Image (spheres, rainbow, N blue to C red):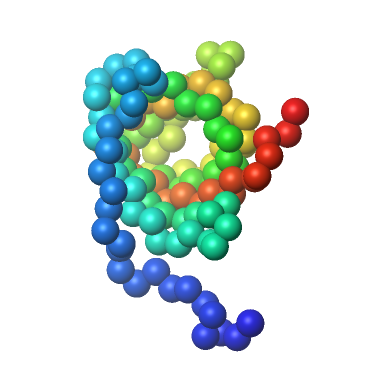
Length: 122
């Protein structure tokens, strides 16, 4: 591949807006938006920006996700009840299989890179 194959994110794609599904909601009804910058042909590797209004919901990751918080404050709590506060400037990875809750305390924006494996390990 040549440098001509390089993908540079120069402008945001059109956002997709949605709400957390009712069966996952714990508090609030946060509107969320996602701007997809890149999805590979297999649809297993994705890069974009996510934004959420305040609220709290259940999460279960089937993918590996690298995140860099750009704005706001969120609290991610694992299934054992251990919370981690995330704020602008924090970078982290959510591993495949992680379960718990995500709470947006202040409207949050993150850059994400996702790898969705075709099979979840047992």
